[in-house]
Image (tube, rainbow, N blue to C red; front, side, top):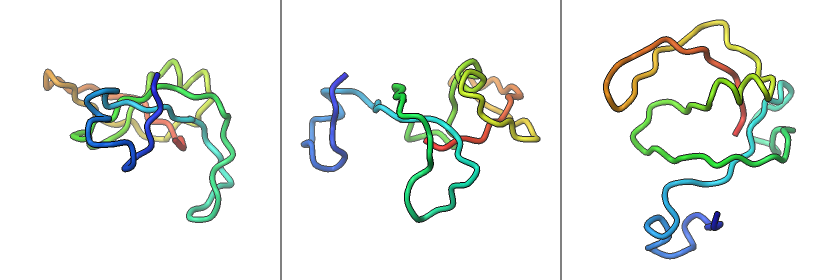
Length: 94
């Protein structure tokens, strides 16, 4: 996958490379913004940028594999077909 620097790669970068980027995913319970960055694994995953989304989602299998802590509540998720379903929520830093 091509790497693109946000805001500096030219006006056609999104068209050329798509709306995706590499992210690190994990959870650091000791991290408090705005200083530094969370201590999470360096493993990178391809993420799709959905500018119309109200929340961020990852596969539940990945959340379990990364041992992300579950949030005490579930949340409703809707897809492009409009059907909503209740999903497990996890705490994570990207």
